[in-house]
Length: 138
Length: 246
Image (cartoon, rainbow over all chains, first blue to last red; front, side, top):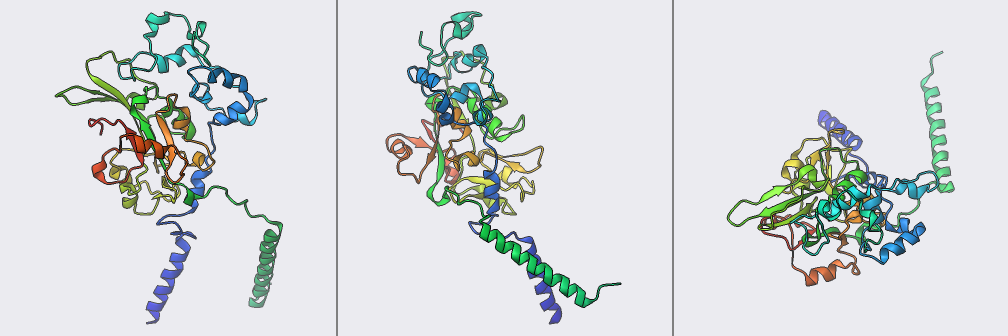
């Protein structure tokens, strides 16, 4: 009898020590995991952060067909620049490669999406010789 | 001189008093974290994918990798290009997960389109059911997440996922997958893939938000989930999904 009670006591103590506090609060998992996942730092600052300072570029873009293209879709993740604009200066993207990524002709792309065979369309000329990236209409 | 049992009790008592004073001071000085504005019970996350808008640029795949530190050769999201020809098996390509786009397709005589894929954030998820230690779970706001501290790396969930959305992270040897950018959406931002999609082919949706455009979208469009026969209650809805897509 004493052995049984001791075994149950040891089991309960071990269980208490091993199972994390609040386990099962939301389901069969450790609720602390939610905070752990949330703590990951953000890399893309988001549209609102960019527009807060760069309203000229945002206005130019709003007048053209790139109105729905987010700044960081072309300029890359800029949260460090947004946090410290003076110290971190983003590099301009490689326009020739960048434009082709979306606008190179492909039969699988939606038919109403503007696309060209770039070698026929412009040869070796960079796209921004004619098109302004923020408002590409010529 | 060796300490007596009485000395040990005295030291223990003093330590208890000091600890209780410390705890009381912490309560008085308000050292607790600020209350969180994000309420899990107010959200139920999912995604809408409009296949007819996807241009296969790979922006979503690159953004996901940059945002989430996805190791090279592994993908939390990827893009497939389908070529469907009558009487033949569909040709499905996804070089580097579509991260760097696709070689231009010139064949106009076959049906072809792009399909972005990611974790379907199933409400009734097989991966959650098979996890032996409670390391993978559906959060109260409907996102399937992995607890990297508890994951054993047994890979049961990798096999159980009908959509092939999980992998074993080569660095941590724990399972990794799309978290629907949980660290972003709980801060009021959209996911990295949706933020960087130039054609709005992907949209983060909150089914519990009555003002979310998803309600209007679902009312007026024909949508489908991947592998509906698996009864996983997937929350990634595809508009104009072709029957060839698996």
